[in-house]
Length: 291
Image (cartoon, one colour):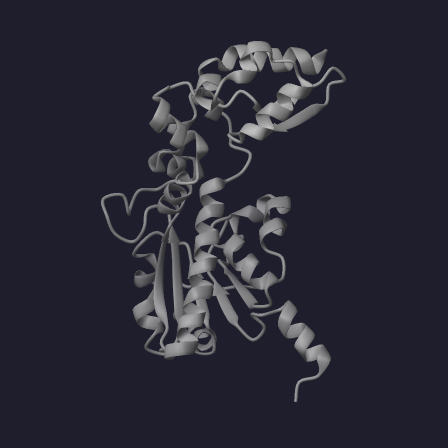
């Protein structure tokens, strides 16, 4: 019989009792297993014996995506380490890996090898371009996946990407889609008793996000290469602080802005005509905010 405390813990930690072996490194993969660990899963992070995860050189980054995990070091090129991995995999629910396609097969720890000892295993691979296709063996990092997915083309001034982006969007997108896929596979396994293999491409994950881009939709309708919404963004005030202005396509938000900032004849323009006069509107807003 469950106590009230047991019921409370079940609500707070829905993945309690789920065990995950995480072979991934850096951000893609570790961010995924961190999300699952936050939901109560037991995550064992398996690192190499030569310094471990590369992000240990950046403690802030390592700690930010590896909380709530246990860590062990294994040299998976040795037969002894492989046997240890097999014993762990026998009682594991999920294996997560981020090697290039074919690496796990060479190490004899791929999905086909593991499902022989654990038929209910859920095995998830996160890679830049997926397990097959012409780009599968290409090396890459976050910025490369953003480029191939087409996200960078939404920015009219590509020079803004000459520096490191503030967030590794492709890494985070791939990890998030992997977490959703793993949760779905766990539900499916509860119903069917069968595990499965999950192939997550970071490039495909970013491509999926582009569908939610307001900028992409407006480009399709307006055809402008240099397209942005002039009343949506950061505006610096006289005291040097910044104001975030969140007026997008909603006409009532635009009219409220115009009631505070006198936009003159520009107040009667619809969204696409406001975009056409973006420089004029942006300049006027900045002048009004600075005062």
